[in-house]
Length: 304
Ligand SMILES: C[S@@+](CC[C@H](N)C(=O)[O-])C[C@H]1O[C@@H](n2cnc3c(N)ncnc32)[C@H](O)[C@@H]1O
Image 1 (cartoon, rainbow, N blue to C red):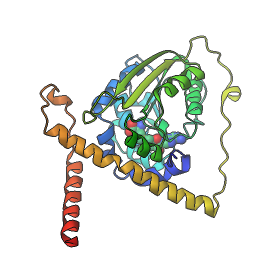
Image 2 (image 1 turned 180 degrees about the horizontal axis):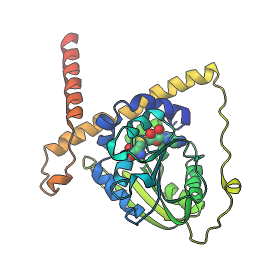
Image 3 (image 1 turned 30 degrees about the horizontal axis):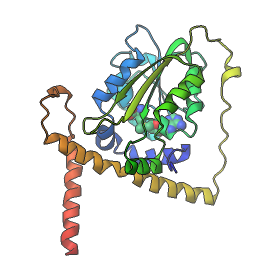
Image 4 (image 1 turned 90 degrees about the vertical axis):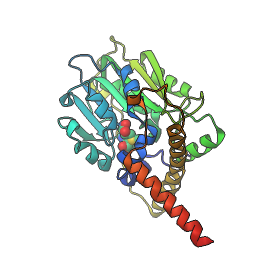
């Protein structure tokens, strides 16, 4: 079903989620240790490189990039002005270039960046293969594209809920999209937050190099046709509202799972994890958790 894997649905989903994204939701699923490990594949320490971060949202991934690349060499692209306004306000991202645009039709010249990075955005793209072809187009010959995204959950209930929400690609699909786009020398690593148990994979980071001898075609020849926005009829509007509400509810079901996982980790032996790397709920999440507990207890008391 993948109700939110559409541009307009994703736009409205983030219209509201952007309000709590950084403080409440994102740190449950995408943490600093995960990000920093995944970004290693991008080889961002190289001197003087330019980087584009696609689906940059509130700039959490970009914050990792600017630890290695000066902000004036970093461009952020996202289709959501609401998400982007949060990124623009972050002091460490001052100097970055911000562009509203679509990952599948990037508003960027061909062969213009040394690095392309995208984290946690591919799952909303209706045509991920097209988005990865765009990554290939905008990267310079010899440059690297790094895609970080979720993987299909191993458990069938998790898979059912995930499928209702958005795209959770199979690992083979990532590899195939990269190879089909023309990338070579593929490198992979896997990431997951500490609360996720078991051997199953959670998130993938896949990097590929554009061949050094790739032709420098003109932009006209390579650039994808921008899609023309069709006016929305009443039926499409109703469907959009239905998809955003049901898709969001499915996505939000992962929040209690993550909170329970965090509590379990907090009460388990963490001596094997260095203090600085331990992932914990922040004060906003703890407050939200307490509010939910109080509401549930009150509701139960009122019903009795
Ligand atoms: C889960 S957030 C990830 C944000 C950020 N990269 C991070 O690491 O926190 C996904 C972002 O992808 C953006 N997005 C979804 N579909 C897009 C598209 N077709 N083109 C550009 N951005 C898109 C959303 O607006 C949202 O900000």
